[in-house]
Image (cartoon, rainbow, N blue to C red; front, side, top):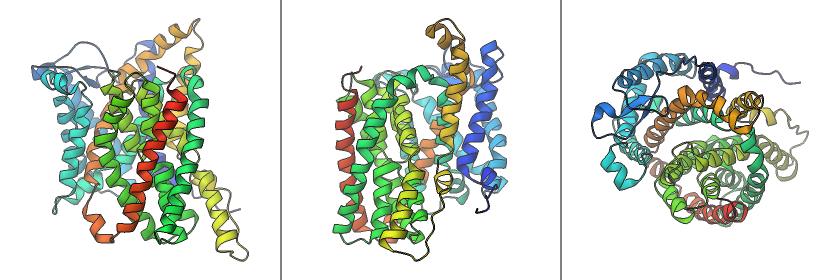
Length: 451
């Protein structure tokens, strides 16, 4: 049996998103007993006078003192995440500078999006995240951007932590009603898109391994799937790098376009709008973020039904990464390359499994178990609601905001010129268009009859 590398528990971002998310969740948990350890975390409020822009918790009146809470969040997250940054290779000084800049850009744009005249124009404060994305893209493509900003722009870590916290808003009573149709849509989505992308890539002259990596990127869940596939089939490292560059660029473009299409096409079908975001927008960060935007555009707020459905669907796609990596490793080793004496380690199922998914289900399970002790579903939901309102939900929104700025900073258009990838770019674009259309059809077929 191969030796288990326990260092991944404290060296991998995926694990750290789980640990940090669970820590913040447990700090929020005493809110059930009206002990608000994180009650000082602020949330945005509609404002015309800037002192009214924040209030404590996810709801409630504006409070000028909540600005001190925002400063507290900056210091709290800066210090909390500094050991994490150091363990994944970011120097404390670099993290302090980079994170601080990203935090305040994200927060000021997020607060600005609650300005009442802007709310009347755009209809949703979530548009502030698009502004953060655009500002991030501008910064990310500046030739002399400080390395501390690039190092600290950990979009995938921020969004995975946010997803763990989002589980605090989703009880199993909700998941039970949607999990089967979501799985139906998932199983009809990624295999079809994967096969189409693979044959399209082969037709355009790309080799088998490159085609497989590209197909996993566009067909399953973006960068995570592309990297997992490249590792499983022993593809050259440049393949995952090239595909990841394409994925990030298109994900940024999708964030600007697809949520508005979702709100326009599914104005009365909240479940379908959220599912479509997850099936269409690649990478966990962009998919969850697009769900939050369309949720806001449809008047549900950043954690409404579309956001929940987007994350739930994306999670139910992500859980198959390990199995897909195992299947591809087996096919390439035994049938394509026909390596003599090849052995595939079944532990790849665990190594490639996205660990933050465990946190998402765990936080939901804990609150569901508590809620089930109450006589009615409504009473149980009301009893556990403070966990989200005074800690988990405001922090989730803050991590969402950090995600958008970070995604923008890591979107470097110069990468396309550096690697010269016209054919892969074209193949990915065509497959992505199909994924968007096919995903919309499946979302309507499975959820068009639901509100």
